[in-house]
Image (cartoon, rainbow, N blue to C red; front, side, top):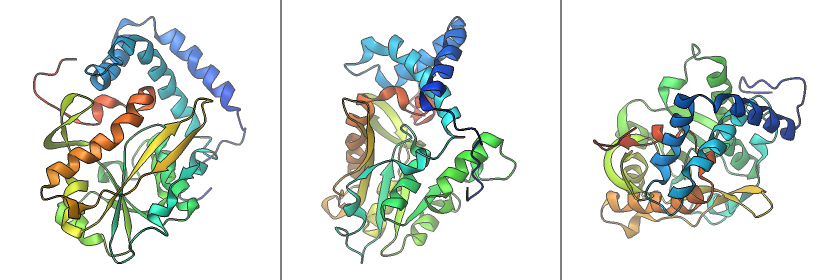
Length: 276
């Protein structure tokens, strides 16, 4: 495996990995503090949606999916080969004279989405938190970063928005998340949150269309990565409005499969007064 990614020699069937995760959750669920923490994750995401009554059941599935994800990270063959639909928005249907932003959420096996998009035919530059890129990180995080790195060149979040924008050149596609803590008040799934302004601001600074990447699931359980028709910054006068539409564009996919969001309470800044 390249980019510092390791794969365990023994290939364990996904069904067995899921069974292992389920048994572990059965043990942990008797711990009140653990159970309340999982419910808090789902409550932060779903409290103001029609799925709020499902929070206790979804919390248990969230716990299982979180443990499963840590196992699958070491069995990455399928993670970096997810099906991609709509790749033409980053290839044949794009304006090569303009840069493009690929906007994603920390949803399902997102660490493998970049390599999957690259395999489908689109070169990427990936904005990555500098704090998790050091060699002193624990093995699981180094594995995670290695998987991300299979998708393209990584740029650390250093130097501020202007510096990052300077790296985004015509013809380039830069992957930027918006579900990270920031200082811009906005709304996601009915909750007031503080989001990062970066993707929207850079889009308008660089005249870069924003292609949303969502994870969709079919009735039989099959999932795929969907790239959507771009949001064009030329249609906006205020980047806050663009940010609102970016987040709105992700809501349906997150609401349909909330239990595979990566640590929801860490994904946005909390407006003062939000409980545990």
